[in-house]
Length: 435
Image 1 (cartoon, rainbow, N blue to C red):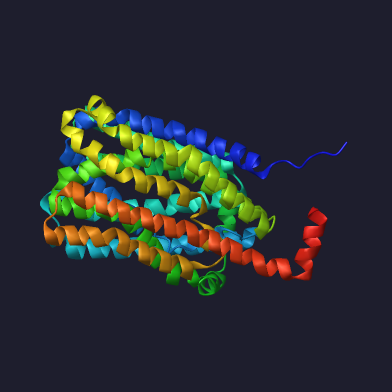
Image 2 (cartoon, helix red, strand yellow):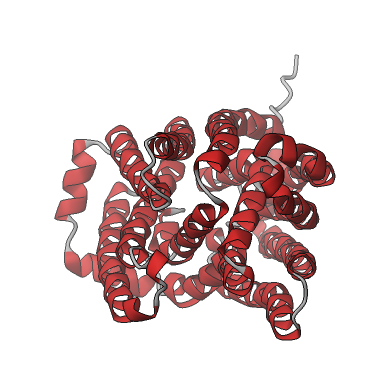
């Protein structure tokens, strides 16, 4: 009897299922608390938290100067220790710079948000460390521990926000809950994924080797930082701009709507991306990754894009019973964001392809185009005095186009990386062995 090879898509589904299960549990807790939080905190409180979280998401993405992504593909423990030490150095330096910049600009910050000057650098450093631990887990194939982190971070933040709201600690308590959840995540996951030998190896890594690593991986800070800032700005800066143009209440509406619409992306599409990275670090050839990518697009379309479109259409009937009539504008915004969220779901599983192939310059160009498509309508709307919902609809249309371009670029990179390999004698031998 001939044993048929196991389907790679089936393997991905099983691996992604474990990550998704934990992510679903965490997001269910997060979503379940929104109706209660909407009654404990005002739209202005949500707006302040949305502005803080959007700022931290943008600056936190570059807290480690993107060196955390260079953990992908690192095979030896010694090189991994060097990379982590470089990341810790980068997080410390960027945290001090962010704090200094915040103090210098504190006179221009509104009174309600003045405490964010001190809290944003802390959240920024925490975000850098959280992402580093996620990258370490994926590099080492520790998907179970990575999945636990997907549960802990949103669940602890939601529960802390709920507790702080019950005792009436004010709108700033939502920010404090986010920072505390980061420390809980770092402590819990750090104990699970780092051995004592790892800690000693990181501490003993020679500084000369650390600086050589920084020079060798120059593409990450040079190309990946602008691209990452653009990408996170696309996802987070609109809330800040909408809040500045139409008031913090509208920033709160947009923040809640975005959280609900992108829920399926977080629950399903992002775990598919995580498993894709883990599979890429195991090897198997570029042809294998290209086939895997095509399968993931089909899965993301059926399991994520279609539910997001359905959620957007049903939003007016769902939001008022869940959150109350004052949150009706959030339902209209969810409908506007649904198509962009559906295309984002297709793009997410392949989002790390440029980093895996060390083609950050392509990502920079793509994200620059996406930035123009998203912020063009926002700036035009502010200048022309358009209605908030009109501006958001046009922004969502531009965002959908940008995510489509991003998906096409990732597939193009994978296809181009396969073609040269197939012409080499070694690749022909591998293909014959596979047959």
